[in-house]
Length: 533
Ligand code: PA5
Image (cartoon, rainbow, N blue to C red; front, side, top):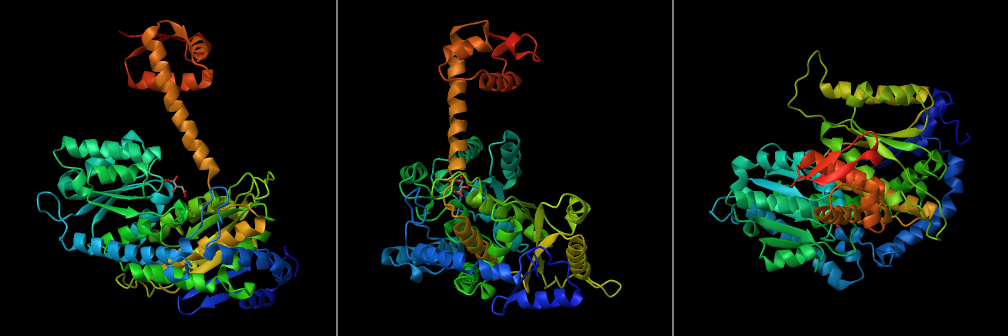
């Protein structure tokens, strides 16, 4: 069978291929099927040598090597769920202490032993954090929280004034009983900082104290850490330097929300740890992460030429597509290889959930441009509270829709991976996340890029702060002079650009009466800006 004719065989060939490639682990209750990907047994044999190197690199990373060389950092998320494997006793002790501390804090909040300034128990959490500091918690809460268990979560992960306004006001009835968690590993990302300032102001305006309800998760000695310390916030949890944002979900970033919804932290960690054990296996056929990474590699010719469409057939896993989008794209989307060659690597990820998406873009997947592969995620155990009607449960239909779509796609020679979990809970979610973390790590080794830095994100943060500096400069220039054109303002502010000035003034003019902008908006060169006063 060549690498591209996986779908050409007869039923018997397909069945044999399915059986030969199927991975299963009883303890987690997980199956991985890559038989509908264009990756032959010969391909898997050919990739064995590159994998030997990849496994060695992962071993070194787990042993504490500086795996993120550009930032001169260790990469320690695998230690978080198995502290014993860290070779540094201080690190392994600190992880264990942190798990105990978070579990105790969560229990104290849920049991009302920690209360607000009026002696009331907390009922709500306002979680402020972006990227790795927001998506994992959102995924955990959305997928695992049981009705009536733990605190109600509201997430702010942006600086959109509409979003902030709507979310803060939605808390109003329970504001006094709301715990505020601000998460920023660096402690300097503008979005959480701006959202925090707004939240703080809102609490104060409504007569509530901030520090006694505020919790920080951040790196030791970051600006946020120092603020929390000097203002005597309720609690601070450490986010160590050696944990990357998008792989921080098995650290305090994920454990605190689990504790606050009354979930068992250890089950989640155990799931990740069990998967880590499976994905250290050196035989590709028995290592689910190696199978997954190989299938990505051949599908996209090692260049990410096919997008990954994530389709969990579960409402509660809707956020998983977004979570994977960050984990995969921020890790693999890199301009340079580790040797400094321009490679422009990546693996685009999008998705939402099935069967809903069968009534949206699945039409194009089956019949349109063939530039993707699907990752189906199936949970076998259905909710037993839903009755059978006409001898069938909605779960039977959901399973039928998944299978039907998988078959319809392969009939049209479209590729797919299927991951099946027997049950869904904190343990299996932990294992699912760990499967993708390791697959990303191994795939990055195959294509020789650094999966653990994010220069593009940093560049975006810097560019945004430059724009805000420019806005202040424009305001200063306009305080002094009237009737200036955009070109003139640009001349007066070194290193500025007309286009940025236009964008800033257009936004300002929609929000303030401070400036009178005269001229024709369709001809930016004609605009003249006056102070209104
Ligand atoms: O994965 C990453 O490193 C990023 O997505 C970060 O999580 C994100 O930029 C937020 O950073 P911080 O937690 O430092 O505020």
